[in-house]
Image 1: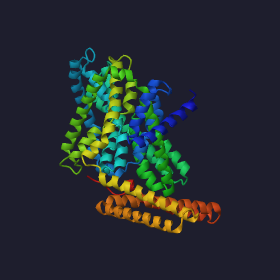
Image 2: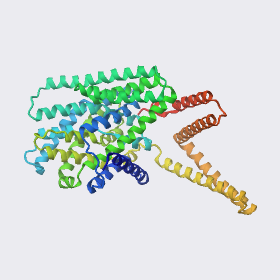
Image 3: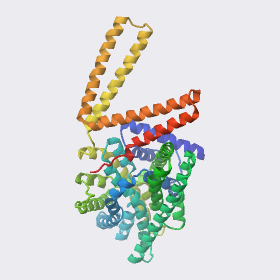
Image 4: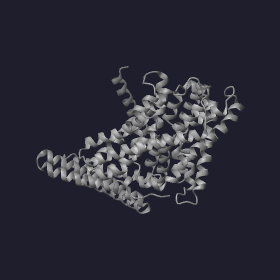
Length: 523
């Protein structure tokens, strides 16, 4: 298949999956993996293989930068201890615990001959990095606490770089290289520290350039340079490109955007990166499914389940242990959240790409790749599909029943108003007698009043529903203002300068309305 047709086919599939996921009410990323598994094993589409070069050159920098750009620095700082503990020492402990749990289980069940602690360490390091995309999307759609989303997303942003460096050290030692704890620690600090320095330098330079430019297209281009340039520069010098991109993204989003971008430009940049993240996620999760062979997973399913259980047990010990240590600090994490953080540690594309990059000389290489692929698929399907029920069971979704009732009442009101509009058309076209029209109008208006009364009662019972309705309506009205200003300028009823001034003012109000950059949301 030619490249252009393949590109179009992938996005057609992604669009169809998105519509199906919305209709079936399942996480989009989970649906993408399922679609990839089905299509990949029927050979209807032959996409490019998900390789380390492709992931690093195209997908990873864009996804990391978008997440870091939208992560508010002040809220991140308020959770720095919890996030750092999970992403660094917690990750190291989880790797060790997973290996310790997996070896005896592997030997007891006779996965393969002589499954060693070294094999367990490699497997645990492969799956150390978490991918919270499906989970954070659910948090936003279901109204889960914002701080919980920050903890899950912040951990993932930091542990990607940590996981890659630790994986490299472990594979080097297992493959026959010399291992020194002191030397490995120094190398880790060098790779991460220099990656951080490069990211901050690139982010600061781009932010200063943004302050001197007032052109949305150029500023979007500059942020793209920050995302991919910081990654490429750090990787060129054998430092952590992941850490570099995260640092550049946070600096551009929290310094460059707030000090150098006009409201209109900031909206354009944020919309651009939101679309980039959607497009990249769509393709990468499809390719995850394409890469896996169902026959291999079925043949090794007992080993995959045991390996996944060891992985989750190690994570649970770390999360609950760190949660216990934080109880006496300002960053105390509610006990109900710990279960969500544990279960929300989904694995994704980075683990699979690292597995494909294992050296050919490594013992049990093919078996480790199968275990990794199986654990990733099981993680995405099982944990991704059950996250919403877990949030509901723990009572972390605000006013679930009231929210569903509110949506039902809103839909009912819209249908009644639509019926009244049709009745007006019939009356105007003299389709019905005036007395019939009057009786029907009175009936439908009475229904509309009843629904309006029930909506007001729901507002009184749950103030968040009213605030959300106000927010949606304000945003819709502001976009209507922008459309009106644009139409007036095109028709000549309003000068271009006046229209631009009006749009700048509307964009400023839209930015001020943004709840993501708004108030704090603690525990």
